[in-house]
Length: 126
Image 1 (cartoon, rainbow, N blue to C red):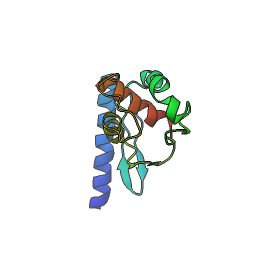
Image 2 (image 1 turned 135 degrees about the horizontal axis):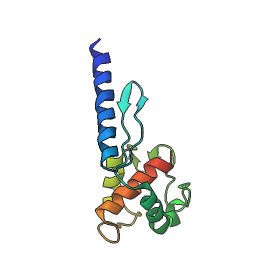
Image 3 (image 1 turned 60 degrees about the horizontal axis):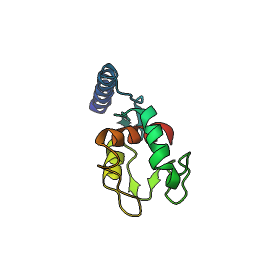
Image 4 (image 1 turned 180 degrees about the vertical axis):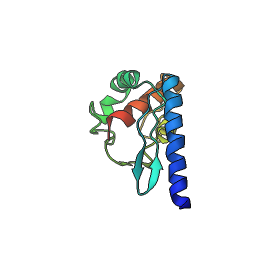
């Protein structure tokens, strides 16, 4: 019984978070479940701007469709390096990547640009 209350509480919190994000103009994805754990994928950036930034800064290595090339694919589980497919994890990686990925933050990418890129990657490459 307590487990169902916990899952219900998490779903309620996720819904309130999504409503709050929508009221502030942020984009967000719907909650999904995986292995009984509620996961909320909330994109904290502008996906349209992220698409432009990706084309200008990332596509040359990761491919225009995220299929990979010099850099790893952005589809499926992120294995190189292994990381969770969350906004927070992507932002941290983009801000402080390991070679051979170039460090583009804080210049030419701003913190907002990094948020937008992470939102685009999460929304586009599954």
